[in-house]
Image 1 (cartoon, helix red, strand yellow):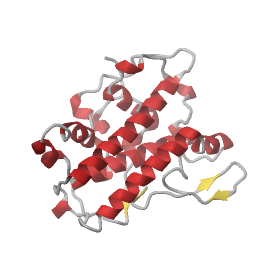
Image 2 (cartoon, rainbow, N blue to C red):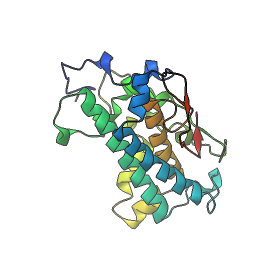
Image 3 (cartoon, rainbow, N blue to C red):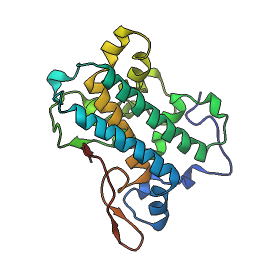
Image 4 (cartoon, helix red, strand yellow):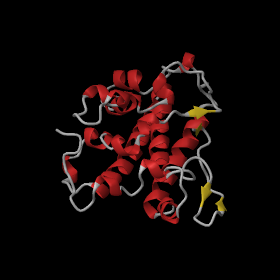
Length: 226
């Protein structure tokens, strides 16, 4: 399987709806994209995850000492964050490539890092600062850093939180090993990083500014910043 197995001849890579080069620009096109139906649905789902995770911090201090704390609630957060990522990345993939949606797998979705560069995003948080030693908490797509962007992705490149979302479903031991606070923060952080990479400032972080320079007060993450 190649990195981009389903080329769409009528939509070249350079014409991606929102390229990484434009991440700091505020054209009307990007403003309208952030306020499209798709973006609003994804944002609403993200803000609910953000809210739930923040509430959990009242009961489980976000720190290295508690990173392996597990619960059904944390497992649900991980699964929901992974589902949100999949919904968003599938939508983006199908904007670029003409393909059989039923054949798409995580490797196809992750290959879009060649365009979004989400793996380069480092997250920060006033909720837990530098209390974690695991790099995946701050860089949820860190496993993609070793991908050369020309060869096929391997299991090594798949994010830890994504693997966790699949393994925690089937057994109690899977929930205990993978339904952890660390994976929950990483999974919600991955959704945050992806949405910011695609829709830009004002989606889940930063100020929403239209093409005329007007500021718009939009709800954003209460946990993460960049």
